[in-house]
Length: 100
Ligand code: SF4
Ligand code: SF4
Image (cartoon, rainbow, N blue to C red; front, side, top):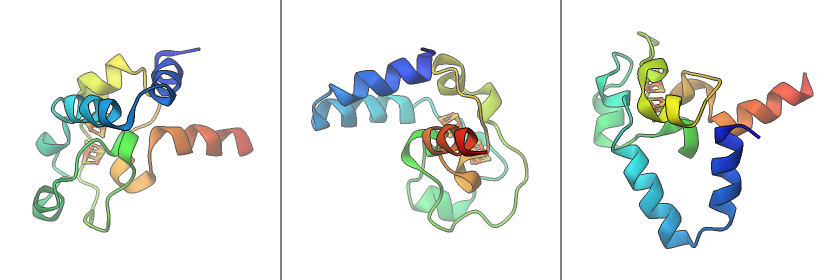
């Protein structure tokens, strides 16, 4: 079990309020606001943490690069993918990978 799998398993046992607190903590470390692809739309919508929450609700118009690889959340959770805002969250992409 890698760190993302352990984190996901741990979350299943968390109360909703505790999970919210944890996601808020991680959102504070998210490097998306420093990424060139992140724009006024995503900022205005308060989007963050695409790797866990899910892709952007239509804000991403062009891919200008991705800062995920240098993000502490990416490192600490041992994430395998990047560009979550456009391509979807880590859990879904790990699942999709098992189908191919
Ligand atoms: S890995 Fe990417 S989407 Fe996830 S918190 Fe870091 S910068 Fe944000
Ligand atoms: S997920 Fe990657 S590409 Fe998208 S805004 Fe965050 S750092 Fe940039």
